[in-house]
Image (tube, rainbow, N blue to C red; front, side, top):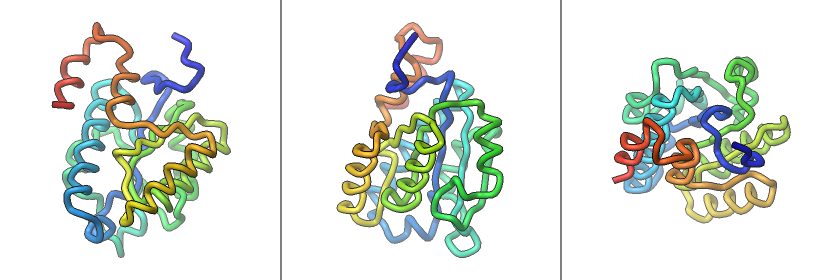
Length: 188
């Protein structure tokens, strides 16, 4: 099915979970972090069910802590985990290899912070020729204004700013999909 690249395609996308770490989320509104985790987990579980590759990054984990356990527990066993000090994931050792190994032309990007690591990563991935989707309700910044600004900048740069439910249903494409009931149930 031809989508022109503007619909998320389960056969051609990977999920990138950016820096959802203990010390970064500690400075954020707890209810916003809870919603972020819920949406990332929905996407992670669907990615696992649909055999979509998942890459997770951690920004300087020695100082900022590990990925939140509610996220880690939902990531598939096949998830590639990378540490980084660069703000863009593209600067992480092994990231280029993980992209090549995925064989995918679409990046579905979630995580924190929207206006720093997510934004820089998305723009660099776009520059490498990938179609990039940033999932607005699965990304977060300490400041809602910074998050809103990042979504505007990404949209103007040609990145698809989407939401969890849209990505899930684009991955499925049809209510007859064998995983439809399981994935749609996660939205209740």
